[in-house]
Amino acid sequence: MRPSSLDVLDLTLPVVADPELETLIETRVGQLVRQLSSTASSTGGSRGELDVRFYEKRRRKASGLGGWLTGTGKSDDEVCWEVWKLKITLTTPRTETGKTTLLETAQSDRQLRFPTERVTLLRAEGPSLHKTAMSIVKIVNRDKDHIPPITTSETNPFPYEILLNPRAEYEGKTLSLFS
Image (cartoon, rainbow, N blue to C red; front, side, top):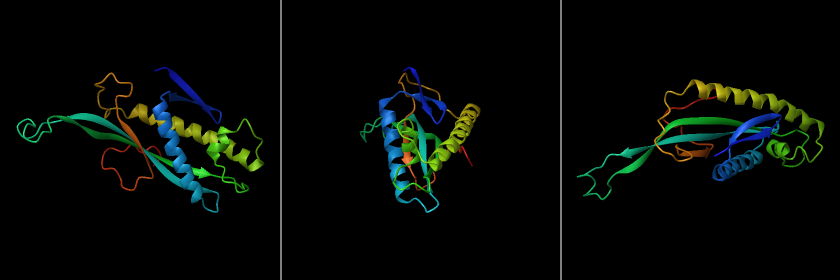
């Protein structure tokens, strides 16, 4: 795996060049944007949440004579060791007539000339994204003691899932980035 980066709103961010992960992120973000676009308030924005959950595979102990009677034997349990709660606000210019989102605006920034309010929103989001990225870096570099040891040579040693607007709070360790 080679290092890669992505330029967004005058900020260069590191990314993992993994087509499966990129597809999952695009799918979840697309679902969130569609959901928030359909419920956008008259003030031009709405809020949602994405949870990124990281798991550790732990070997389950055999039950019932080594699993012989139950036929289960040993298997793996996935134990959640960290949850990132990403609170998302979808902002749309008040003068916007269509359903174009800020994400779509950022992606087509080079192709179109935007109304003044849209440009103002984009300029305002750049420092916010930078502050958020730096906050994430600070937190993940500070809080590392709970990370399980890497016991595999796989590219991604920890299974993960991305949940859209999860209903129930997770009972495990939660890394709250912006409380």
